[in-house]
Amino acid sequence: MILENIKLALSGLYANKVRTFLTMLGIIIGIASLITIMTVSDSMNNSVMAQMSGLGANNIEFYLGTKTYDENMRSPKDSDYYDNKVFEAIGSAFQSQIKGISLTKSVGSTKITDKKKYANVEISGLNKTAMDSNNLKMVAGHVFSESEYNGVHKLAIVSDKYVNNMFGGDVNKALGQKLEFMTGSKYYSYTIVGVYKYSESSSGGFSMGTSEKDISTPCYITLNAAVAQLKDKELYESFTVIAKDGVDATALATSITNFVNESFYKNNDTYEAFGYSMKESIDYTQNMLSTQKMAFMAIGAISLLVGGIGVMNIMVVSIMERTREIGTRKALGATNGQIRLQFITEAIVICVAGGIIGVILGLIFGMVASNMMNYKGTPSIAGIIGSVLFSVVFGVFFGFYPANKAAKMNPIDALRYE
Image 1 (cartoon, rainbow, N blue to C red):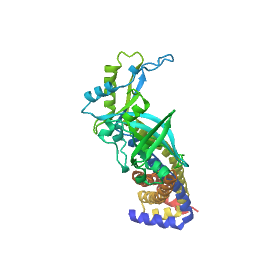
Image 2: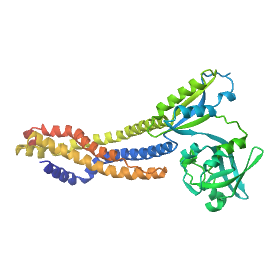
Image 3: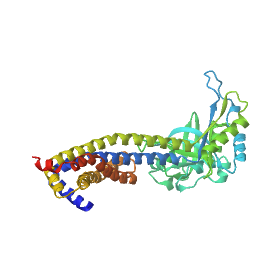
């Protein structure tokens, strides 16, 4: 019975090809809009989340915060900053939950020049935990050894983009060469011992809109070398705790914050420790992007609703044109249910056919738009399946009224209809 209704619906739709296509057009546009929105949104969301996760989902960032806001509050003193006593206490109290404490000192940004060649770099001193958390992919040389971290060695690790600018891309030629620069009025010289592959995640930021040659890439030296160069005290405004896998970073952030404040800042009149986990930021961003996606989908659904109303409108017109046909079928014994099912099936066929075409067009448009925005196209399988099922539901919903109207026709009045 269902198969016969499908064949009957297809033959009826084929007999009015132009009208059928125009009826389907609203569904096609609506479904294509939704699939395009979902594809672009998922591609953008996945890219953003991948970059944020690359910064460390297990990272817990700590900053020096103020207990209360006061425009006349004093500036931080040496005793307000984090020092080795704080780090040793955290390491001892939370040894089973953390991998280590990441410490970084920024030396500054500079332009390295050699005649017409130049490269922009951001020089930072890192301890071993900080360097390990960057997950650098080395293309030549090596990362610092244990003895190099512990000593004060004038060694540097640069990016492959730095090598492209200064050594024509020859990474082996770069090894052993000097990295020379000025900071303030002082001249410094470091020996390049490693080259890593640059990526947005390794930079800790974004270089959108910057030319390939002018991108400023990180240059790493040891933390001890940075402290010696800056003639700085080993005091820090911020640090990062790396939680072990499986540990609830959000709960750990709260525990460490309370521990540090109770142990070191209880009697401090102005400053205290403030910590939050990257997981909190990732979860917040994920929720925000999901809400944004739903808002865009709701806008796209308006065109689908218009398409569904168009289907119902054409079905009403079709039933009026086929009034004598309906009367004849009823006179030959067709029940109200059979008449209703015939026209609902016809509406479903229109919506499903339009939905399938819309899915194909939406995937094409979505992939093209994603690539134009430099995101990796990510088709939504759930969205595709949902769109097809949604088309069936739309067919039933918008086809029921005209189908029910046809089923309730009086066969005698229908046969008399001119």
